[in-house]
Image 1 (cartoon, rainbow, N blue to C red):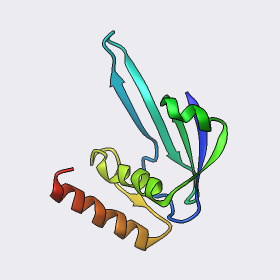
Image 2 (image 1 turned 120 degrees about the vertical axis):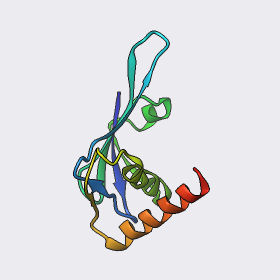
Image 3 (image 1 turned 90 degrees about the vertical axis):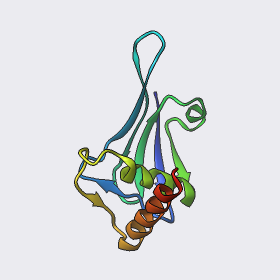
Length: 111
């Protein structure tokens, strides 16, 4: 897996009481493959371990993320199973409210 430190210079990262996000897939061989692990460590930095080919270019580096990428990462916390976490945590209340609003709009559009 490739490791990167992600930095946000604008919009802040949010997290939850279960801060580790990950995604797996089942392979045709019957194994489970880990695609990524994502973990915010502060409102400005997060860790990303990834098997995506594009992540090789950014391995072992600080990656400054665009506001749209930070928004996408933040939205993952609102898409997780309700049993997985009870609290969403943010430094900026306005950013959290905006993230919730966008998530609700996506649900209405069926995304």
